Image 1 (cartoon, rainbow, N blue to C red):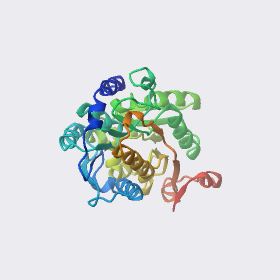
Image 2: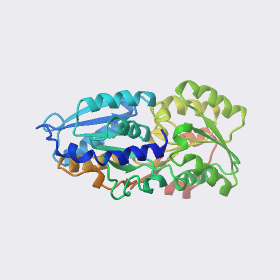
Image 3: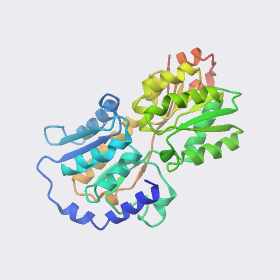
Image 4: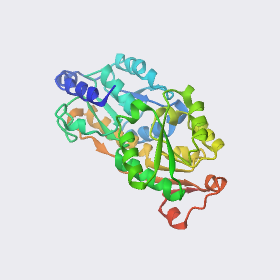
Length: 328
């Protein structure tokens, strides 16, 4: 679904919200959590959410219930999983990706939704009021893949692998065209003097052919965007990158902990902990449409020196000093 359709759905939800807000919540409120990842992959994020809730006085099983659903990196499952959560009538639903929040908006226009999404100028066209006052049943966090962040990742990749001229970008077309990745890649590549080849992947079954293309087209370095499909399979993904001997930059630290070279992106557990604050506000009666969409507060740079050595790369001391974490 395109972003404009998503925003239209948000606008239509505004009128229905007051009725939902007046509905009496059960003695032990239920939170629905829709993670796009697997149980194991999502564990660190969900622990941060529970810790955040605990800091606010909520203990799972004691005064709050949490219903979990896991997409296992398969966006085609999100709609059915969200429908299941909606049928349970939770007090609020938290979704962990752009695709999941769009599926959630289609599933309900009354239950409060907290989502991680990418920003877009369409959100300021009048379909919703503003970033500060969304005006519907949705609020959340802007886990941006906007042009500036994409450009920063390309700059870091070129800095750590000097002399590259041809970069491959493995993307999910439907995601990359709406979250700023495609625009950002072409814009930044032009400024940096890089040739970017877009490698489209629509399902896990296409990964092998995509990596074959990397070798065939003599890609010198790889740009990996935010995607539940890749993240849920990061061990396999990083292994395939290593088999081609190609340096790559990833959006999250978990890739680097698995053996990836470098990552630059949001701290996901931090975002889940912050989401607990919005859960608390909604449970206490705040309208999600009056809670501002929040930007990422922490971007972190992670470097794996062992992987760098395996690739024959020498990373400068100055670069390492800028890193938030160096894995040796």
